[in-house]
Image (cartoon, rainbow, N blue to C red; front, side, top):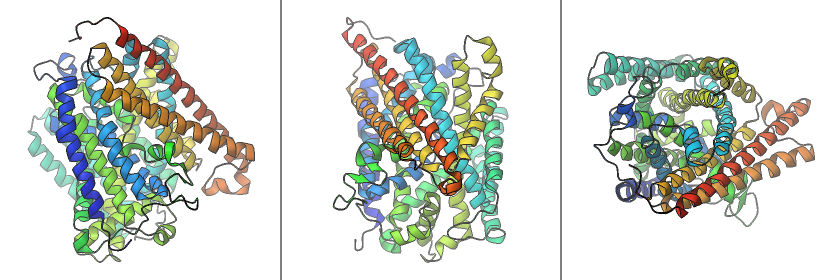
Length: 595
């Protein structure tokens, strides 16, 4: 490719996302939802100090960003580069500009205008009781899949880079202390944040020191801890986060994690801008395919570019998970309606920058190096980020990936993005389980209470994660996650139709995402899992790929095939009832919009 630098592609992304926020989002905010700063929000109407409480937009932005940003926008682009980095880049820019931030902002604002209600009650009221039941069932399956992926990866990161555990512990301490200072001691946010950041810096330095002293850097990285221990530590942290009031654990811890996570994005963006001076060049092909002559335009080994590419990239352009964070978390903490734009749209566009930064880290690795790293996404990210950022600080390109402080930081960066979101996944699972068992006192007492439901989520997720069937989990997670985004966009379209607001900006993306994601789930379910079952050659990796594990691998393929079928059917039910409801509101006689 010659001397092509990451600068060109990152700069294009910064320009596109800047236009999205300062032009499109502001116009949409003013002309569609019309926020009123004098209108009481649910945080003030139902303030209980547990779930409902007004929060500074700066803290809430950090909470929202760390609540929505996990491993999807970091590892997803790596799967996307099987088509080449150009198709992945196009989807990250176009998808976020036209779909991603609109989804996040609309879901948040819809909940704010409806007393802070979550997706289940909103679906019940706006669509139908059947759609609500189908959506709750969909969410339970979907959240189990996320837990499976994240428990596995969080445990793996702890094992590969034990220094990351030190940083996570200091992040929790920093967050809890900031929460006490801000909410108990009434210390201003600036002073509280400065003290919290000092604690974070100590943790990062200590993690780097221990990495250089006790856990030397190797490529590909080796496990210093057993995987089960890393998964157990992950489960304990996430269980506590799920059952503790959000104001005393999840919100301040996520706010603390926002700082190293966002600083990491900024460092990569700055390093990409500096790449012509540092000499770090793009080495990855712009288009790639296993199919001769197609060069990634139509097909790669992960499937056809449509509908698979939007699903494999996962959250960098659009994510259904964000609708859960917005309706079940941030909507109940929004101080004034005008804060919805920076919190909803702003956080999603920053996640786009996160995906863009991750893609730039992969761009600087050639295929021989990817092979040497055994095509492990997490190893490639840490290696690429250390190379790109290390060069900016004058560390030689061949030395930077072995610097213990860089490796500890980027390993912790991955871990913090994953574990802070996983604790919210478990929280939302137990809320969904409570909704699913409503009206059934016995079930509510046994499996609907927050402790048992949280344990169920983690135990089932652990069982799936222990299977080693990574590819099965990731593809189903991507398809279900993006489909949820399409359903959330449809729900916001229905609400806008009900209150006589423009719907085209939401409905068009909703149709595209539902069709795309149903197609992707059908592809994964029938052309991956069912095909493997029929051929007697299950999709498997690691130990499960060995002949002696054939029966276990085949059984898991059957389980994931059933999961895929359930997700397809439930998604279609919600979409069918949703479009009927949308047409009913559109055809209804004109009436004054609800205030």
